[in-house]
Amino acid sequence: MLSLFLTHLEGYKKDAIKSPILIILEVICELLLPLVMAEIVDVAIPSGDVGYIFAMGGLMLVLAVLAMAWAPPNTPPSPARALAAICANACLIRCRTSPSPTSTAFPPPPLSPA
Image (tube, rainbow, N blue to C red; front, side, top):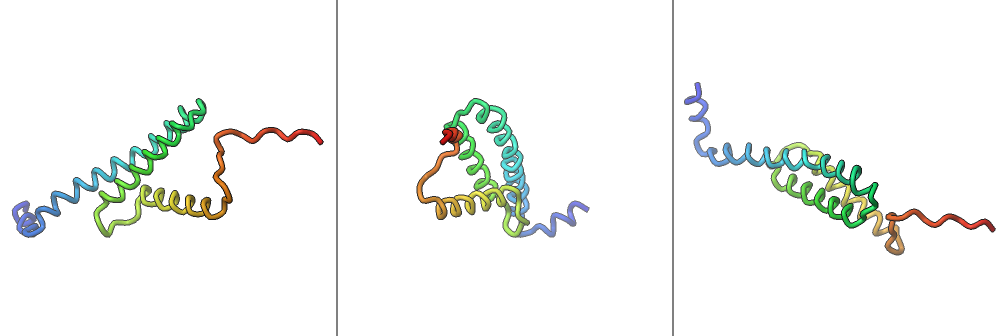
């Protein structure tokens, strides 16, 4: 039975080896995304470390791009692809609507009574 299966792989042996490896790498990147987000929520936000938040956000973007790059062609959209698309769209919208750079790292000062 296996020999019959292997005869059908003639000419596709490289792809038959490469595809599972790429899928495993993609899945690893996608499984790391929630762990990085948990690190941001559990560690960086309570401590108020903005640099660490941006570093972890950058790591998430790198993981999303790697997952997209390692995805075999003609596969359905993955969470990493959706995250990359959402981030790109949010950046474009914010850049177009904001007259100047804004920071949400610190809450605004309280309003003084008139």
